[in-house]
Amino acid sequence: MRRKIVVANRKMNGDMPSNQAFLEGLVSATLSHQRADYVVCMPHPYLFQAQAILKNTHVHWGGQNMSRYQSGAHTGSVSPPMLKEFGCEYVIIGHSERRLHGHDTDTSTGERFEVAIQSGLIPIFCMGETLEEYEDGATDIVTIRQLNAVITEIGVQGLSGGVLAYEPVWAIGTGKAATPGHAQNVLSFLRGHIEMLDAELAKNIRILYGGSVNSANAEQLFAMPDIDGALVGGASLNTEEFVGICLAADRASATNQNRLVSFP
Ligand code: 13P
Image (cartoon, rainbow, N blue to C red; front, side, top):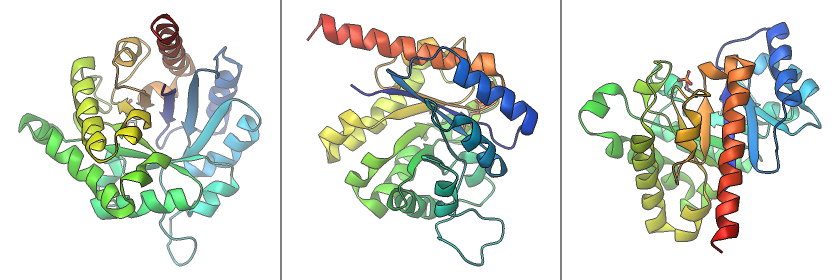
């Protein structure tokens, strides 16, 4: 059974006092980490703070992006060893906010997915269509193109070291989350594509939904069979909201476990 995973993408938000309140609140919230994973992706200057507060707790942390280079003349970039030095286990790759502003391409995201794995980091790989592409019915074409860029680089087996996330651009920060049905259809389509290449991997790889997830809609999303968790932006700026989403993941995992017990 796939473990649920809830990832906070705090984007370019926060300061030392508000980060501290959020991170300490998350640690002390009564989350059962037996059944789900919780991850906080911080702006890079605050990884030091995340490490200090989250070390030896059940909450994991990560970066929001990384260079494909290990070091050198790359002003403004952050290398995989730097993320590792601050205890990161995860790194977001290919978020639409970076793709849309021209920083990330299909090729560069594929390359950095591979570098992340080689560096001992777990890439959280984002895919998703714009509103225009959605209205043109191009969701499948766009997400498969983005996914295939990684598969071309690293081979289908290489996906196993990462986590995938479907984040439709039109749902990000708009308050208009995809319906659970739409998200399920896209995730099932992506899993089906992987299944054609490697059935075992398709069963095990975790695929998240992201885009206006909050504590009110998380439960319904997590009830979908292919949705293994959420990538959370705005709602991760509020401890109570984010904890609410984590608790929904925990409950959904508990329900799945009960199902397995009832129907072996
Ligand atoms: P929101 O949850 O604010 O819509 O952002 C989603 C996102 O971009 C997470 O990576």
